[in-house]
Amino acid sequence: DAKTTQPTSMDCAEGRAANLPCNHSTISGNEYVYWYRQIHSQGPQYIIHGLKNNETNEMASLIITEDRKSSTLILPHATLRDTAVYYCIVRVRAAGNKLTFGGGTRVLVKP
Amino acid sequence: DAGVIQSPRHEVTEMGQEVTLRCKPISGHNSLFWYRQTMMRGLELLIYFNNNVPIDDSGMPEDRFSAKMPNASFSTLKIQPSEPRDSAVYFCASSQSGGLGTEAFFGQGTRLTVV
Image 1 (cartoon, rainbow over the protein chains, first blue to last red):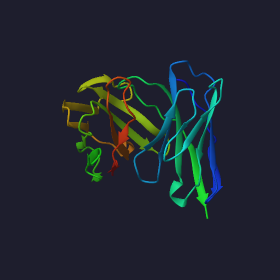
Image 2: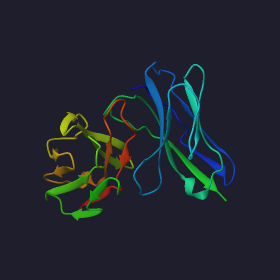
Image 3: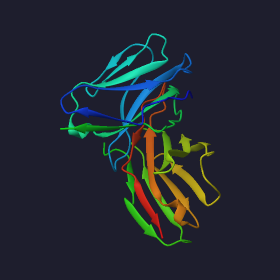
Image 4: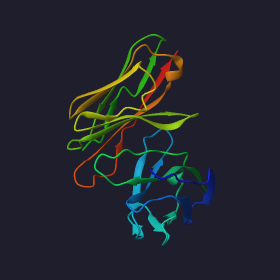
């Protein structure tokens, strides 16, 4: 699976959009971009995934650049409960394929 | 569905004792993953199963660690003998491996302290 690079930490204001970048310059054609988050003392939680088109669900939006070498996770209206470590993962979307976590971005939402 | 269920939630044991961690995956999911999380090393994949068969155990740190999945609804991770450096939070996750598969769902973890 391709390696990803994320900022170690970032702050954002409550109620504002939080934009979390991820670089994956070695991504291959059949690899998807996944985002998970881990709130303190809990197990990681799936947020969203995409291949090349932008994706949106009730939690977030995922913007993938045209060359697919980077992406941005957008939390449209950050709340204090969005404070967590966010992981960007690139993997082949195959049945039962493993999920490998990097360091992630520690996001602190401030009032 | 109750999600992935892990037990116990907390375990404190003495060095040298055997420790068994348990996991019940989500019904219908046939991929199961064991992870370990520490401050120093982050989230590490220890082993994963597809259809009850171990696929990749390269993350298992040493022979003291073993994992089994006797059926589709139960898995164990055993440490024997335990050492203080095994202290960590251990997570179990499951996913559905049909077609392209689905995202993984994680349990709440077992916090293990070896003294």
